[in-house]
Each structure stands twice: as structure tokens, then as C-alpha cells.
Image 1 (tube, rainbow, N blue to C red):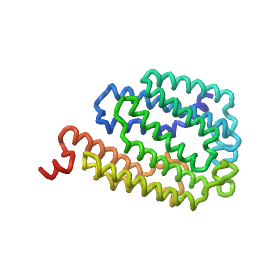
Image 2: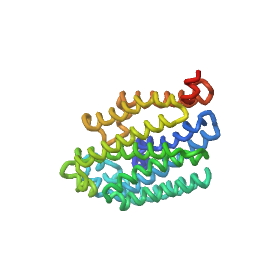
Image 3: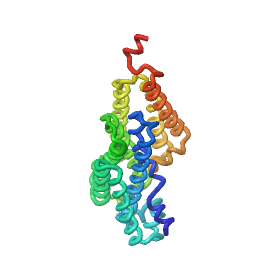
Image 4: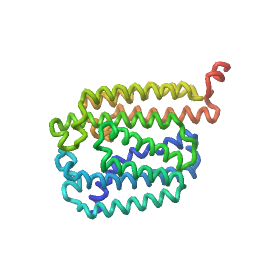
Length: 298
């Protein structure tokens, strides 16, 4: 039963909680080991909370999941895990996660509670409201990013919020489109909200969101104190376009975690992370000039 419970927590999707580490990188605290302890603790707590939410969502969607070609194999939908056992385990996880959040600090505790309430609301009724369902998913990512900053008591950049929101919205739209393509006429039977969307509508929304995300990242690099961040623009463009190639051509956008198995995506992500760290900390320690004025004077 323990194995089925762990599978129901979907550890393969915990990568979404890695956004909690963005704050420690961009606040120039990579060498602050105390803050590392706090942010790792926050990451573990959000993995616990998100795992409990996945279990609850599977319980609520048990009948619909049984009609899905892939989701019907999940422990709860397949009957390998009893609903009563799964629900009890989810409640215990929420209690443990909330207690851990309280021990970090009160602001992190408050945002953790907000995350729980948001995702529960999504599982129960918000996921059935067109467009709202996508916005809630995106806000969930923003909450993760904010939580990572609050856990270590650093400034929350507006650019972090807008870019996290738009990136999450982009991923959610691509996933919806994949679901429509995969399920076809059965889409509405699996998830009622899918009947409200169309591939054409989602394509338009993907185009708008992609343009907004690119422009937001451009403005961030243009307006940042460190002009060298503009060097990362080609990697961001490649990553987004590669993702769209995989969604539209390879048709694997329904499981975003699978994209990390694509060499092109993986290399672009690694290069972006390495380049950002080198630029931010190179400027911080005086290796690079941080602004255009100082650069032109040299």
C-alpha cells in the first residue's frame, strides 16, 4: 500500500516545486547555507502539500480518470488503493506540511495555507470554469515562487511573479491542447471543461501568452541593473520554441515532465541556469560590470 500511496503523490511532478529555489538564486544567497536549509525545508513541505493535493484530486476524479487511456492506471482509479486509505494519508500529509510551514516562519505558513485552499478549490469546482481553471494553475506557480522568497526572507521581484505566471500559463495551455488532441470526442466525458475549449482557441491563447512571456523576459533583462542578462535571451527563445516543437510536432505536451528527457530542452535549461548564475554572481563579486554606464566608461 505504501508504494501505491507514493505513486499517488506523483513524485515525478514535484519538479514544479523547484521554482521555490528561484528566490535564493536571484537574491544572491547561493553561498548562504542557513538560507539553503530554509529553502530546502520549504521545498520538502511543498512536495508534501502538493502530494496530498494530488491524492485528493484523484479521489474526486476517480470516475473520470477511469475513462482516460492513461489515468485509469493510477492506483486510486484502478482500485489498487482504497479511497479511505488514500484520504486518511492525504489528511496526515496536510497536517505534517502545515506544521512544518509554521516552524519556518509565519509568512511562509500563511502562503502555504493559501496554496492549500487554492488547490482544494481548484479540485472541487474551479477546474470546471473555463479560463479560470488555467489562471488558478498559473497562480499556483506564482505562490510557489513567492513561498520560496518568504521562506528565506528576501525581496519578491515583480518580474519573478509575472514571468512565473506567464510560463505556468503557457505550460497549462499546451497541456489542455494535448488533452483535446489525445482524447478527441471523448474529451468532454473525461473532463467537462475540455468541452468548452477548442484547439483553435487554445492555439490563439498560446500565441498571446508566448508573446507576453517573451516580452516580459526581454523587459526584465533590458531594465535589470545587470545588462549581461540580455545574453540569456537566445536560450529562453530556444527553450520556448523547442517546447512548442515538441507539443505541436512530437505531441508530448500532456506530460511536461517528459520534456526534461528531450536533449534540446535539457541542454537549454542547464545552459540558462549556469549562465544566469555566472552573470549574477560575476557582477556581484566585481568580475563583470553591472550596468551600461560603467561598461561604456571602461
